[in-house]
Image (cartoon, rainbow, N blue to C red; front, side, top):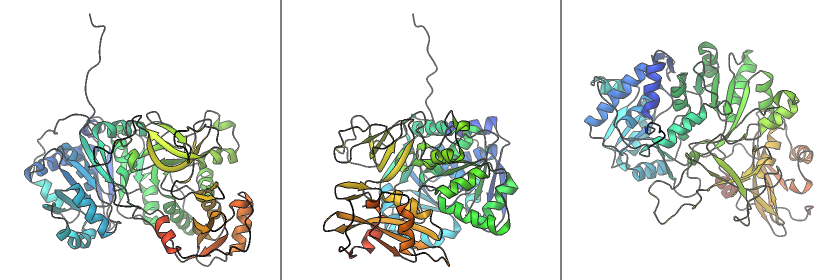
Amino acid sequence: MPLGAMQDRGFRVTQILDHAAREHGSRELVTRWADGSETRTTWAEVRHDALRMTQALRRVGVQPGDRVATLAMNHVHHLISWYGVIGAGGVIHTLNPRLFDEQLDYIVNHAEDLVLLYDASLQPVVERMKSRWPTVKHYICFDNGEFADWIGAEDGEATWTEGDERDPCMLCYTSGTTGNPKGVLYEHRSTTIHALASLQPDCFHIEVSAVILPVVPMFHAACWSLPWGAGAAGAKLVFSMVNDPAVLCDLFAKEGVTHTAGVPTVWLSVFEHLDATGGDFGRLKKVMCGGTAMPRFMIERFMRAGVDVMHLWGMTETSPIGTAGYRPWNWDQLSFDEQVDIKSRQGRAPFGVELRCVDLDDPAKILPRDGTTSGALQIRGPWIVKRYFKAEMDAAPDPENWFNTGDVAVIHPDGTLQLTDRTKDVIKSGGEWISSVELENAAMAFPGVAEAACIGIYHPKWDERPVLVVVKKPGADVSGEDLIAHLAQQVAKWWLPDAVEFVDELPHTGTGKVSKKDLRDQFSDYKLVTGVPSEQ
């Protein structure tokens, strides 16, 4: 005789929207459009419009598993398309408009997108690329009335396409800094579990009272799961099509924003705007920051203003949450500097994922969590990629499901992650490893430095030596000697760069990160002065 059992209901992403509309139907969603106008809607209306879009997609022949692409910024029509495509059984494929034409060409054709929805501002990209996208049969503009008319022809009296929880629902491609971009195919199950993880207090801490303005683009790694988490909690969403600091600060104040997320460069521009206008952060409680490490001075400024900084680490392949900043049990017993030390790291893995570091030279050797031993970072869990989209089946994943992230890190005894480099960027000098990231962070803390990147340059004796490439802030008076003297107080002497080079700008990838590959190409003929010995 059975002792009991639970209902067997699989996870589907559309359940998030059903819940938001049923339990939080009147909760508001706001969009500030590119022309400065605003529209307001609710979770109940978003669900109705998503169902109408599901009907429209079926009318043009979209079948379960078909890919539907978007080339768009952050707004409610884009959100409707996420749920509408998935509701029809399709796979929403977010395209990054900042990528080069060659990358967009490859990605759309590799994905075999059938429909493409786009912003009017990106019409030139669409017109330029149409002839190179033979699989795309239907083009619909989001914000010139075409999208509203397209779904407006439907009544919304429909049901979502049913299926297995392991069906695909979303496709995101890596930025492709080496080789062609790779597709990561998220599942209903992985996406829903990931959304639930984002609600954890030690993660994004999203509650029904939250007002979330995601600065991170919706085309980047599922907007860090914020549209899914907001729906699961019934939170208010505020979208802005432009990331102008004046617009963002106006929305912070006007809409009572409590949660926001973006890369460090966004917050630098916000600081500058607030300094110029005398404004403040309003009701802001949490800032999620990822992409690159947040400089210490930035963390200190937010914390002194009463804003909790949530340092994140993740990647497209991790949906993207791998770790999130947190407050340990003894937070109130720590000094301010000790608190900043913790927030400067990349946080701790939420329930659902596991982390470990292995030796860079011997991957079979698992390294201790001692806070000092750095190695190649690996991760596994239910929302971590197993195999890339359309990858050959003989490219078997690790039998224990450990995914190599490409990052170099240390894990502290309390589980806190601290990134030290990328495996392809770490500098090996005289048989010892030098962290380019640590040198960059130290340089960024120096007054007058706007941006810094460190690369390894060939050295006949030490194999590689670090060279620091720096962009000055406008009008700043910074010398190489000043920077070296500053770094000498922060790092070991043998880590000090052999040279500092000043440039007008650094090369960046389509996702806004410094492209070390392009920087190394730029300095491929660079010759170090080897007459001055480096002490190692």
